[in-house]
Length: 123
Image 1 (cartoon, rainbow, N blue to C red):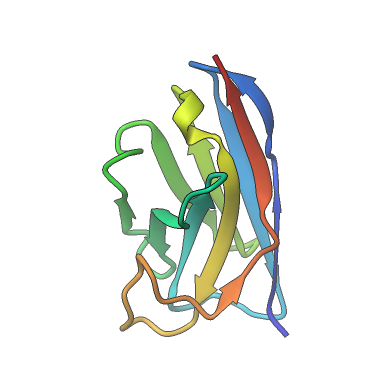
Image 2 (cartoon, rainbow, N blue to C red):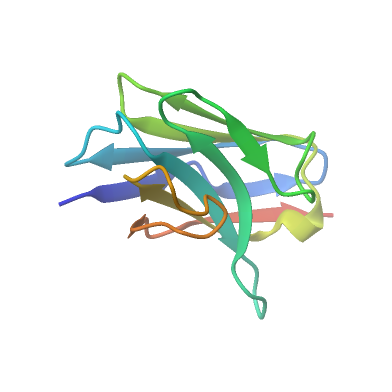
């Protein structure tokens, strides 16, 4: 019953910013964690960021640390990814994911996935 819908992708110049949103339905995230992943053309899916729903604790891939920020709005069951100082290598399809348990690997283990939103960074 859980659905995740991403939005906010688009085309931006290098150095610019985008804010992605992921709205969930059919589930209240009182526990567990949510995350963002991305997949560039011809490359494997990679972990970007995760947030623990209850505490708001965050963890980032080294490639985005200091540039991206994940956050959540508990009232809206929505997670965000603020992307600053974007680089062409950030170009990818970005996927939102959710996990209701709290004991898995938040860089990999998710039960629910969104459809993805395209982010293109031009040079």
